Image (cartoon, rainbow, N blue to C red; front, side, top):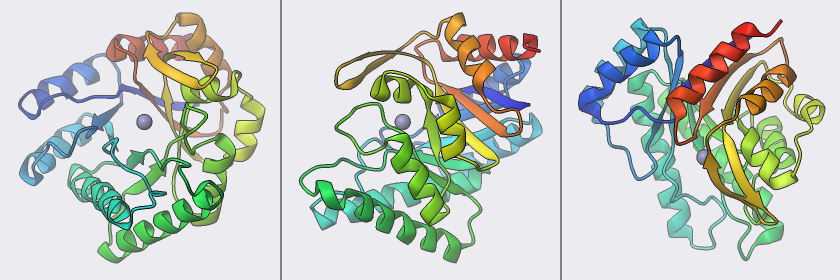
Length: 256
Ligand SMILES: [Zn+2]
């Protein structure tokens, strides 16, 4: 089984090198850069950080800003959404990042058209990426709130019909569906490469409330159920994401 573990955050540019060395020293091989509130790395720094990450065998990924919605009823917001995701792709290419994770959108007023609108947006993004010759992939994420687009079925269908990558957030799946059907997920995502988010989560009737520290037992459950024939990156988003990632790595090494 090939699994890379790492946190959802690189931190500031001026400490990026130390951070990557620290992760490497702990055996972690992945790191997601949080552009949650915008792209904060300049192109020249991105190339430098990318070189360091590569030399340490750490695969980088990017989380696109939260202010995106491919199902907005305001065309200007769709344009802005695409620009935000493409800006992440552009800097991600300089970073040598593998993937840009994003929240696909809300059901909003156009509930019935949601799937088609989001699919259309993704196809247009893929067209630009191909034209630019970028290698980076874009990955809509499974979402934890029931009123937000992003069930495992919806994300699987997008990946199948557009060829885009995907992010399976197992904490979100639990919060949304109240249980995790590992066999179904394996069936829905036959692709060889899985980008995964995982952490403890607090949830209610409407789904996700917030991420919390990952318990050892939760890691054991996830890791014992993951398919063995895939290349998997697991990004931890808990408040103690580095420690939790190290715990996941240690448990995975101890499993038969
Ligand atoms: Zn996310």
